[in-house]
Image 1 (spheres, rainbow, N blue to C red):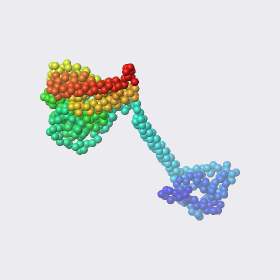
Image 2 (image 1 turned 90 degrees about the vertical axis):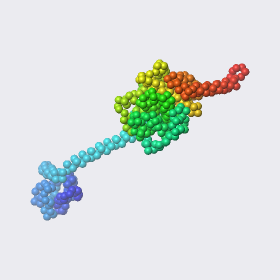
Image 3 (image 1 turned 135 degrees about the horizontal axis):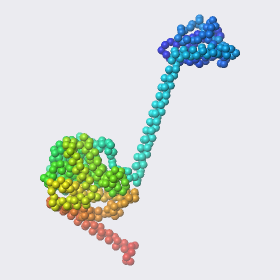
Image 4 (image 1 turned 45 degrees about the vertical axis):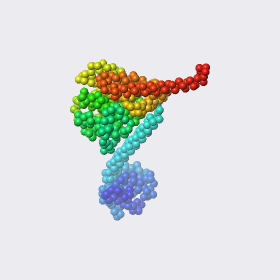
Length: 516
């Protein structure tokens, strides 16, 4: 009942109820129950009394909502039926009421409206439920991620923090965070250009942007930009990408990368390798040097394997760090904006890629004896036209450059020893905390700077450089002699340390020969 919400005029019926005229307006949504409720409430008839609708002559009628609206002068009468008469008239009334309900349903499309409303309500309820579940799931995921981050941040013994820095499924993470416009162009002085070619170059006086410019100059000076048809802007972006992907470790950082690359550039000039090797070989040597320690985590292969880190598992304990450096290097090169070999033929690029991988893998010190022995077998009858001989030489050259700090002047080399020992001590502290084996040369309670360097110089550096000296005699004066001087320097320091230790011991010994 009430006013209709439809666009057409409502139906009106006038009823004579006990001599009183009642005007009734039915909306399109009115049901038969509403009619009965109206009629019952409009009289004093008890609710359990049946209702019969008759015309003024007393004939039983049914209401057709589509018929013209009646007027007050031609009223329908509402007649009560006593309870005793119900049985007799019940069927007639029910038929009339059914017809009324049917007519109302057809006229006002009540059932269709109910179905439509019910369906829409069900859809809304389902949508609300689904959206609510999504919100709950998202919040749960956020909580789980936060919990995981908190656990990783507080877990002192967690070995997962030494995994690779980047997810290889998203190469964009390897892009430099800044582009070429913010990469200042430096004009190198003639003095700097000449110094770059020598092992005496002081690597500590240069900022990152300056080191980037020096590396860029080396590629141009060696003719590599022209040889590989590099876009100069791509070279800049590649170098930026390289710098961004070295971590801030005490030793294995971007400055170490620059040291190794500068020493390679110096050895190329010192040994006149441009006259003996191809420009492609020059590009392989320089690029391997630049990339050789990319994303180094600061913990060596021994730790990776003993701690069963993600890198060790991924590479089956076989040179995990070096394999990772290669992977990151070619992730960067795979980016179009950083691909310095974009204009190289595919087959040539495959050869370059394989050669760079070979050189980076050769920097694993676990393979030192194997590689040096192989070179020793070839050096006396070395053939620059022999591909295997040249490959072995390039492996030895990158090894020399990688561990060449002691070739430099003492004031340049010694700070690197401090950096390396700091990184070693961080690793040994972690190994002790995790119950892993600790190498004596990395234990802060056992090693000193002289003891750390003497054995390394005598048994690793000098034998390797002296072998190279057989092929390139000019190496002796510039590189081997500084190594011998460095060995003598640390042996003198050790003698001083030993003397001071003995003195302390004697001061603490009583006459009986026992400690106080």
